[in-house]
Length: 180
Image (tube, rainbow, N blue to C red; front, side, top):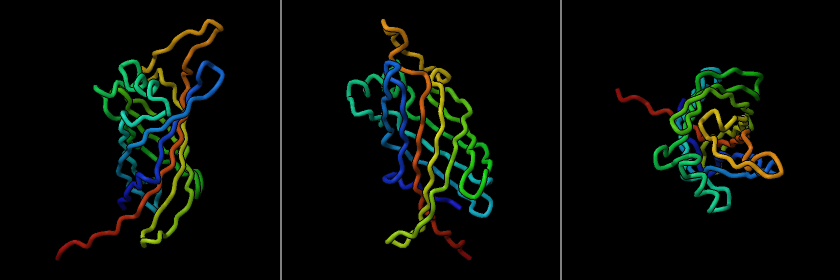
């Protein structure tokens, strides 16, 4: 069954090491997608998410402009990051591994998201909503994001490992009866 992504209650956040001593955190503010959640057989679920690369926000406009530039995401040439699932391994009733292909800058690599079902609820507007959390770690260099600066004290300005944290809220879409 098709589910609508509730973009105002869904978030894609990330963190990376800065100067080897702290973490910089950010998010992508605009995402959309199609999720077909099979409640009876979660292994048949499919996910197709599109993230607007220009919507990156780290709370520092100068850094965000650099991240949008050809040194990193090159949003003029590659306006979207995408994730398309390939399979789901159910771990238990609350957890699963969502396997799929992440595309950044026209480079597609497999990733696995550790997903946890956060529950379901009926909204005050009568809709049925489900919540999910997911996390993964990637090496940015695998997607050609190699820009960096060596530090005189050793190490580099930007860490290679990126942690991605996702919160998704989905709204169940009512089935439409076929005309006779």
